Length: 119
Image (cartoon, rainbow, N blue to C red; front, side, top):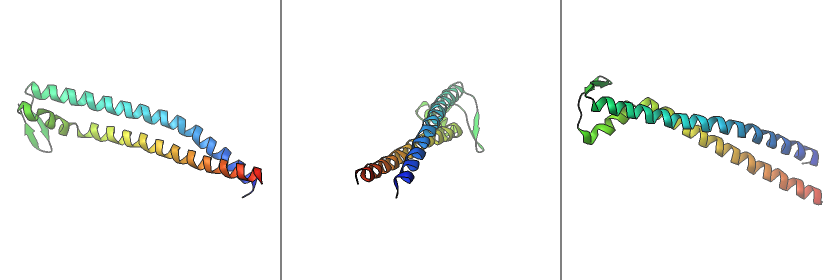
């Protein structure tokens, strides 16, 4: 590899890191919104169950469930919000891993560049 190609690769990785920082912020906000939406839906569902409202999930209806299983039922009823929360969390973690991989590649190119400068 020549020094010019290494320099171009370093610049490319730096550009990807800059893009990734912006993407990370977007994904962090989506993760936070996912958590908030799930918690809110869970609270509302628990309140509805505690107030004796009939709720149906996949053709099965419940009314006034025992307090000991109320939260488990509410979590099952809020499955869509939980799915979105988990997707957002995994998307955020994926962005972090990608940034770490780009940083590792950048470090490798910088090491090659230093070696070529010293020869």
